[in-house]
Length: 371
Ligand code: NAD
Ligand code: TYD
Image (cartoon, rainbow, N blue to C red; front, side, top):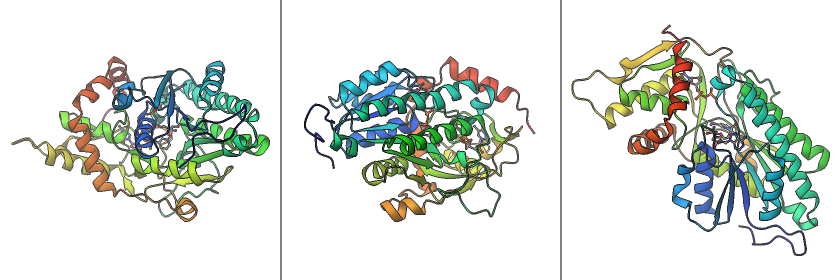
């Protein structure tokens, strides 16, 4: 735990943290679990793009420790003002464009938010940090949340990504995140800003926008729609339950060494087709349809994603060894909880599936005729 004020004098820090992208999937899980675990105040800066949903945080909206600021991480003036007003002891940076398929269709927003937005945030953090007194400078942290996709792709049998694996991003999304990671690294090395970076594998759990594999398949299965599996369905991802990711971020913030990067993963590699069939079986169990065919029959192989990375796998031994973090949730159990959450939260699902969502689904899948 942290004390209320880090130093005395003009340039003090509050116990507050500034979260960016806290209305998105991982950010909202992080804010909710943070308020339970830590109790310290949170300022959430989020632009509320199609992927952000203030309703995710409805349960804490009237909590006096929570402040929501709608705005853009590319807006230097706004960030400077928020830092000056709230004097946070840390920034936890989630805000990003995060969907690979969208980065293939429209890469510009990814460069803008992920590269320029991170740059703007780092610059503002640097000015704020430079004005702090010595104790404040020592206590401050900038935690940059990144992805394993910066490392590129693995063949079956290759060793998992470690923190020293060379960067080889393959999609515009991964390239823009790699750019942001390099900037974060440079701000530590050049200016001494206490930056920490986490590179995490695929997350799943409540509040994930239903353009990503797991929620898309749950909702399509529920509604008896085709389940569009890209290519041969044998691409492998390492899945981590979102609350485990949030716990890892809290650990890194509390005990990570500035300048270090930490890989975070679930040790749960699964081929996409296995994930999809498991979802079908869970939906069959939880929402049986008398006389209907098993949902597996809805699986439809469609045209592959261009440049589709074959396999991701994370070696999380550093964070386990140095900080004592390891995932708590088993994949099959976490997936069952996730399916149940989507089935129980029809109102949330309907609210995020706006016209914008429907336009995306029409665009992304219209061109992927069955293979
Ligand atoms: P998400 O797309 O669900 O949410 C992104 C949030 O950022 C949204 O609330 C959106 O409104 C906000 N945002 C977007 N552009 C913004 C801008 N210019 N200014 C302010 N806010 C803006 O993303 P997510 O899946 O929650 O991912 C969060 C972070 O974690 C990202 O940095 C992503 O790269 C990283 N990550 C995600 C995964 C995963 O599996 N989802 C895995 C590893 C790392
Ligand atoms: P996704 O959830 O988009 O995450 P990422 O591309 O960042 O790993 O996709 C996970 C895997 O599922 C990926 O290999 C692509 C595949 N996929 C499908 O087969 N069909 C789909 O409709 C989607 C969205 C993804």
